[in-house]
Every structure is written in C-alpha cells, then in structure tokens.
Amino acid sequence: MALLHHASAPSTYWSYALATTVYLINHLPTVLHSRQSPFELLFGRVPDFHKLRTFGCQCYPWLVPYRANKFQSKSQPCVFLGYSLTQHVFQCLNLHTGKIYLSRLVTFDESIFPFTKATPSGPQPTATSIVPDATTTVTLSPTPGMASSSPTNNSSCSASPLPIAPALPTHTHLMVTQAQNNIFCPKQLSVTTKHTLAPPLESTCVSQALKDPRWRKVMADEFTALVSHGTWSLVSRPSTSNLIGCKWVSRIKHHPDGTMDQCKARLVAKGFNQRPGVDYTETFSPVIKPTSIHLILSLDMLNNWPLKQLDVNNEFLHGQLTEQVFMHQPAGLIDQSHPHHVCSLQKFIYGLKQTSRAWYTALRSNLLALGFFNSKSDSSLFIFDRDGILLYVLVYVDDLILTGNNNTFLQHVVTSLGETFSLKELSDLYYFLGVEVIPVQQGLFLSQNRYIHDLLTRLNMVGAKAVHTPMSVSTKLMFDDGLASYDANEYRCIIGSLQYLSLTRPDLGFAVNHLAQFMHKPTVTYWQHVKMLFRYVKQTIHFGLLMRRQSNPVFWGFSDAD
Picture 1 (cartoon, rainbow, N blue to C red):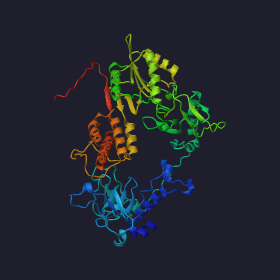
Picture 2: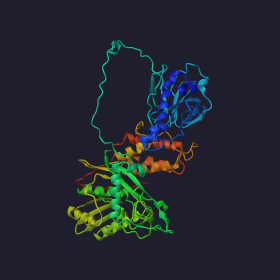
Picture 3: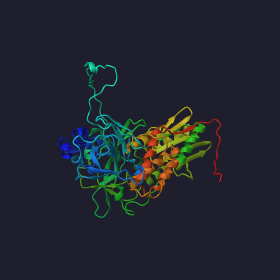
Picture 4: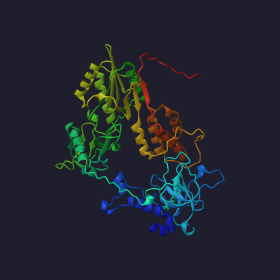
C-alpha cells in the first residue's frame, strides 16, 4: 500500500506492488537471521542493491534493435513496475499504449512519477511490445487479470504471465461445473514424518565450515594427510623471507547424473603472493590435447582393449620442494602451543606456482623408469611398446587413463605406481574431465551433458527458450557495430567454455570460432549471439560423440581440393 500511494498508482496494480514488496523483503537483512537476508542464506552471497529503484518512477527501456525503421525513437517513457520473478530484468509499462516491457537495459528518472498525471482508473494495456534480446514481449488483454506472454524473438528466458488484479470469471460454455453448484472437494495435505539430511552448502569461510560436522570432518582428514606426509614444519617467523597466506577451499563433487558424490576440502596456498626468483622459478606444466583423447579412445574401440581410469590422492604431495617457502598456519587449525610460528613447506601444496610442474616431473620419472616413453606430439601421452606389449597412459594432473593390449602388464603398472603414490581404486572409465564415457552397443558415447547444464545454470539460462540453429543466418556480425560494449572478461571466459565443448560437440566449431573473433572488444550484439548459441546447446544438450567399433576399420583421409 505504501508503494502504491507513493507512486499514486491505481489499485489495479496491487499485484505488482505486492511482488516488489516480496522482492525487497527477500533482499533486506533481518535481525532474525543475524543481519543476513533470505537471499544471502539461500544463495550464499550478498545481494546486489545497486539495481534497486523507486517503484512507479519514470524509466526508459532500450528498444533500438526492434524498431520498425531507423526514424523511430530509441526508447519510450514508461513506468517502473518492479522486478521480474523469473528473469533478471525490470518491468516497464507504457502508459500510452499499455505495453509491458521486460528489459535489462533501462534508464531511470526517480524524481518523476507518471501515475500522478494519468487517469485514476489507469491505462488499459492492449498491444504487444517489441523489445531487444535483453527483454521479453508480454501481451496483456484489455480485461485486468487476463494475461498471456508471447516471446517475439529468441530471448534468453521465456516470459511467464505477470500477476494482475484478478477479474470475475465469465462462463462462455454450457457445461455446469461443480464450483457453480457449490461443490468443493477438501484439500488432501500430505504430512511426512521422515526427514533426510540436506546436502551441505559449499562453505565460503572457515568459521562457516567449522559449524558443519561434515565439513569439519573432511577438513580434519585433509589436515591429517598433510601432516602425515610431512608437508611442513613449524618454525619461527623469518624477518626477511616472503610469507604467503593460505585458505580452505570446499567443493561438493557430483556424479554425472547430478547427484552428490562427496565433499572435498583443500588447503590451498595463495600462490599469487609468491615472488619470482625468491620462492619459485619454473611453473610450466603440459596439458593433454583433445586430439590425443580422441585417438586413444579410437584405438581402444578398434582393438577392444580394456579402458581403465586411475586417480591419485593428494598428488601434489608427492614431490620434494627445492625452494624455501614460508606459509601462514591454516585458519581454524592453528597449533596452540606455537600460535605465532609459520609453516616451512617441505613438500608441495595446492596453489603454489611450481606445484603442477613438480607433480608432472615426479609422475613422468616413474613412468619412464617403467619403460614408457613420451609422445613427441603430446607430452601428456606416455607409450609402452616392447615385446608385443602396447600400453598407453594419458595424464591430466591427477587423472590417468590407461589402455592397452595386455591387462596383466596394465595391473603391474598400477601396482608399481601405487608403491610410490597414493592411488584410488582402479575402475572402468566413466567420467573424465567433465566428459561422460557411456558404453553402448555400437562402442562408446561421449557426452558433456552435466558440463552443459552447469554452464546454463551459471548463465541463468536453464529455463531459456531453445532454438534449432546455433547462429542467425540473416545477421552479419561486424567488428564495430556502434553498440554498447560488454564485459570482456566474462565474454572470453564463456567463449573458452564453449571451445572446450568441441571435445564432444564438433557441430559448434564454426559458431564458436566466429564468435571468438570478437573477444578483443565484445559488444551487446555479440553477447546476444552467444546466448543464442547456448539456447541451441540447450536444445541439443543430449548430443554427443559416438565412437563406433569396427570389425574392418578403414583409414580415411581428407584434403582441401583447392
């Protein structure tokens, strides 16, 4: 009521004021929850208060891409009616046409309230609005309460009917319903007495993690492993040496189907505090090539070899640190007898700049000692070829793929590595680097279903409208289209994620390559095409790469007939 009276809005817009009130309550801190907002408790982050605007004020949504001709205005004066419940957009009403716009790009004038000049009954919205990619079209019927949404373009999210004041029902059919005869069935309320323990949230600070017994246990296990391996020794704080910090990082690992697998906590050094030439020198570590993965899996399918997966526990602890590195004691687990001492690292730990290189060097030395040799085209591929025994080992940090024509020698290699490193149980390959490896009758099906779902969730596009083409065939992208620029860091990060999808989705290759040409200065137009590509990915989320078994394999070669 306060919002309606302050904006001089008609009572027919009570539902918009109610939705705005609920939105504000969920974003404001409360004493009941120790000065935290319901939004912060639900999502684990502080809400953004910069987008809050005065209800009923004048606003100007951006309408450039969908003008009928270039002589039309770029925007129109509207009234701000709150926030969408399903999208990160603002609701804007045109008082003259009755059109509702849902737009991200809106300019506000919070000193003007157009309802004070409008008629007491308020406008009657009748038309359909056309809005840019950041918006969604909503059509309102002349009668309040009868609303329907109809997206006119491939927007990032589909619109849902907006709440309007309810109208009395009108019966246009001859059927007599139970409600007309005052016959109502009582609601059946189900009561459950058995409660399951909710999965723990990923903690963002030590004090929060220590309150949960599950996170406290995994942190204690990690700390015990570090101490038992002699990772550091407590010494007096040096006065001249560089001292780096550390922090606990918690993650919840999931199965490919999205169910919870386990909780993991890592003590990570703040390697960005290290100084070159003081506490680190070389940092480079090779990364496996997607072509190598395709090649090894193809060989496995052609020869029907066993395909195994091996994981290493605390892989970065298997190496002796040559530089002198001093680190603060872990937060929450400080030695009470020496609270002012620091950790003199004897072995590697997560976060150090030289850690990945040292682990690769240690693993490479052991594999070479077993008779393997490095591939010349990929340093992460190790090959054993002797006395008719052929074995391949693919290495990506602590994940190893093993396949070959001799299962006995494969077990011998695993046993030999287990004498030096702490290994997990050898298992068939089923999930590797975000790729699901699914055995089917024809061979192996490679899918990144879970990886795609995580990307859609990150971009708030799980409910986006799906499309059947990755790019628009009528729009030609230009390097400088004159529109507003977009966040370059986010654009490059998303393009990199799409490039990784090419591991199992070669159909995205052309579109991703085309969009990657604008990473130096992305604009809103390019970002709209990125979102269209993600809507295509959502439509084809179950697509993947099928590697077939062949009884008589044929080697095919392709060339450019230029």
